[in-house]
Image (cartoon, rainbow, N blue to C red; front, side, top):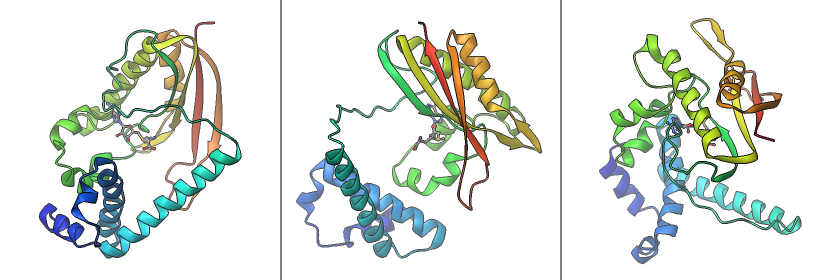
Length: 227
Ligand SMILES: C[S@@+](CC[C@H](N)C(=O)[O-])C[C@H]1O[C@@H](n2cnc3c(N)ncnc32)[C@H](O)[C@@H]1O
């Protein structure tokens, strides 16, 4: 769907007043539900209004559940800040970070740009430049796996650099098959981690459930810096 059409539809979704949209927190919250609806429309042609309402209700339900758990277990939430950046060149000083939990791309298994093109176009993202900087998507088909490992090695080096001493980094990764060949990403990551200086602590292997899963297992790798 073209952006103008989408915006016109968005404007008619409900009788929410314009001033509601002038609060960026509300606008961005509703935009998230809208982008989910756009995805449903793109993939299963679900009506935009129906999709928007459904997704908005789902998000609200999850927020209520989250707060119920937070209250039940008396969890104190920390401050948060979302920053956009490149994992191969983190904008943090050496030894500044208390802990890392990350799920990096599973080799070249998913083309995140192709999958989310509708949303990226809506958000006016510079797609060629993004493709050039996304781990797992960079380069000619025959170079992609090689580039992926170069980028992941850099990114694991960066994790080591920015972490405080005696701190942990947890990476979730799946093994993938490319041209019939099984890539043992988890083994490569352990190799990169130890090369960076990390002590490898353990790997937890877990099955990926669900009918659409193309991968059967993923691995949670635990590293420690120093200590
Ligand atoms: C397996 S997904 C993890 C998604 C995330 N955990 C979530 O729940 O949305 C890998 C993510 O790595 C991101 N990515 C790819 N290249 C990157 C880069 N150079 N710097 C930072 N993130 C990148 C992709 O956009 C993708 O969302």
